[in-house]
Image (cartoon, rainbow, N blue to C red; front, top):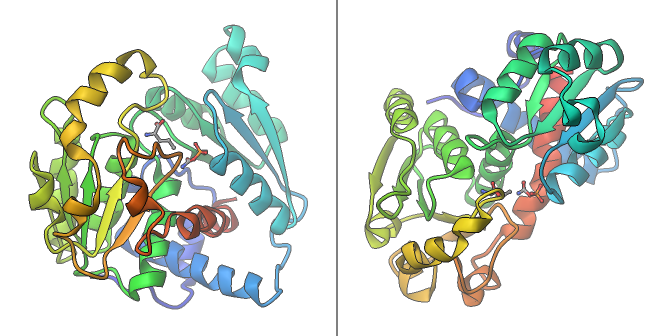
Length: 320
Ligand code: CP
Ligand code: NVA
């Protein structure tokens, strides 16, 4: 199991210029390093120190979907690091009316020092990264949400003091947020349990990769259709919306399919008494989570949202 250790120049040098598309592309040591870096940066910021290490650098931010946290935390992060961030709605770019991803990647690299993109298709983001000579950071695709997972684990680290050996239960849709969360947990040697309804499982190929990764780091990953089994003894209980962006026409069917997967008082009674509740937000109270849980004493969702800023500043400072 890797520890969140002291600054490591070898790891830091290896991160320069890298894309962040999936946490599977990073080593466990690199993820531990980024979490440690984020934690240090947060303490520095709270002490009033904000070194302008990205002075003169510009991050382009392309959005094909809505966003509150991702857009604002990346923009504020760049400002705090002394650089600039530029919001671009994909609809307004020429890519929105058919310019190729190939040309877009090449052209953006002429102006920008990095690109953050929230896109419908992970394949498109991979193609963009292939043709951009500057780092491309995934701000959510249909498959992954890596920056979210870094903020999630930073929050667990702050509240629980360590990650290895802790049990994290994800209950709900086997979606982008779940994929990145469980991979991150596996990197850090946590015990992860995923409960999804039949037909909405965690991607089976990614599950196998997460299991291998967890085993290497002294942790484990299991998948079940039983929320009680997943939550029993958990230190962390996590859920996300039942209907992700782009799935709106499935909303009614999903409400029915997920009705037994709500995080409520009866379910969290099976978790550790001092469990922490996390949700990437936006949330739908009384759907995937009871109001009593998300607004209760075990909920850390706003600290978690705040940690998007610090986790992403660590990524930006190292890859740009
Ligand atoms: N959690 C998250 O990515 O939030 P936004 O959709 O508001 O960016
Ligand atoms: N799974 C959600 C996450 C939103 C931050 C979605 O893709 O809409």
